[in-house]
Image (tube, rainbow, N blue to C red; front, side):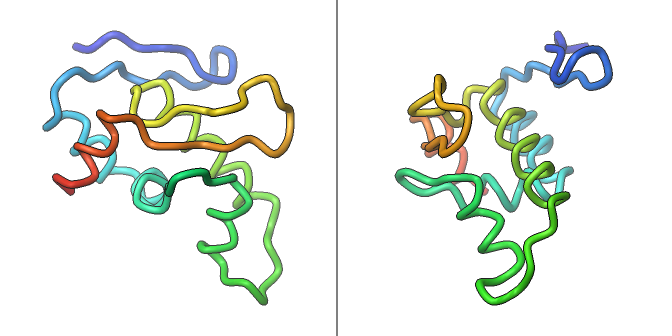
Amino acid sequence: MPKKKKLYGKSRTVPILKSSLQLISWIMRGKMRKFVFQNIEDKTMPSDIVERLVGTNKRKPQSHYVQVSRALAELEIQGLLKCLNPKEKTGRFYQLTIKGKELLKML
């Protein structure tokens, strides 16, 4: 059983996975995780991902921002992406790590 890291207090835990096969399986099990992981580019903001999710001319529900932010946090715990400006409260930029880029090629 892999170790788990707490996310958002006690209510949510994320398993710390080591092998590439485990990580791919974990990403594929989450629809939002998979979408977010595949749509991270060089410097991507969460609002950019939400825009790709719902389209440019449609209303963007708050729940999409919450789901994208949670998926980003989970992927960051796994070491697949990193926040380029973690001290900022809003307007954070995310980028894939080397490990994340290698895994994206395998998907």
